[in-house]
Image (cartoon, rainbow, N blue to C red; front, side, top):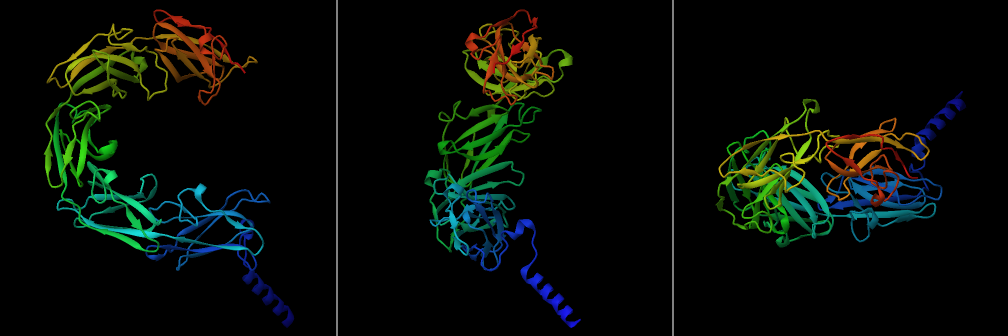
Length: 529
């Protein structure tokens, strides 16, 4: 009996010492004599605790086995993982607001392609992989009146091409503090974005405070050390202005104002309130241009484009009062067959010389609002919206029911007129229908159809598909000649098209003529292998 009890105790002791594991764990569970990768993660404040270290196979193992496993660092920032022989990459992740970094003897890398390959060749091999980072801490404050707002801090490499870390903090009595204990050694840049609680305004700049990132000074991150920047931010320069017209409190689109710095880089934004007012605090010096946007219509103060826009000098502690800006426009009522329901339309706006001014794609309750920043004579091209892939039964037109810019009816917007109403009547277009077949004569389901005019003035795709029986119907076509085709892939990837009556070359396709919105049927397409 005594020997039997001793045997049971010996068995239990062996089980506890060896430990249990599932099929997936046993191959890499640590035990005497097995290979391993070990190391330590150090940051600006010393050992990095609870960081996730991941080890992955860099290529297929000789036995076809692919390993991916991870472990958290201990209280000393150390890790130890058993692995079978093979080639491995080691990365660190799971540190709040910090990118994933791969191990390299030359320093942490953001891209796996730049990582060192850790080779475990023979049984009993081991490798030591130590990550050595530095850190950065920021102590700063704002002028009174900005308590409780938000600040987002981004850390990039010195060329602004690689993002290292990003963190959001709030202000406490106008002061704020942020720490990045894990950053790769070397030079880095810091960008700050300050925003109101409701994001009604935002302001962006680089440290030391500048609107021109070319003038930003890089900070040196040293291994195992904390670099710090302790300075208050300057009093902001405040941009103030007002928009007159119906758009500030309209049902169409609320205006907003962007501040664009050198190299066309965004540095600030403000929404426009219901009284047409906007205000943007800028916390750094520099030069900037201002763009006002209403819906899809933009206006650069001073000119129509960025290079021609007036350049404002931004000086901390000053206020720039911008001249009131008038915004008028059109409210276009889309009238059509009620059965067509919501009309997915867009209106391209041109001046009387044929220069494109803007395109408005969004309609609300079949009304399209077109904001314009100057009085003048305009022409409208009513087309299908790019935001809809649904078939439209009505045909595109130049207002009012014309087929060209020259024949279009001009529309005058007078100075001081807030909103001119325009009634647009949409007419049913012509149609082309038929079947799509495989080379063997079977119907093809879900194939996209393409239609375009031989001269290239009209072209559409991704709006019509064949049904399970291979039937298709292309509708909403204006009068004129069209060539049609079926795409070779259901994904609509434009890798190939069979054009009617059976060619891969659209130059050899047979045109189909639409007159007086007629319906043309029996146009069958047999896909070319």
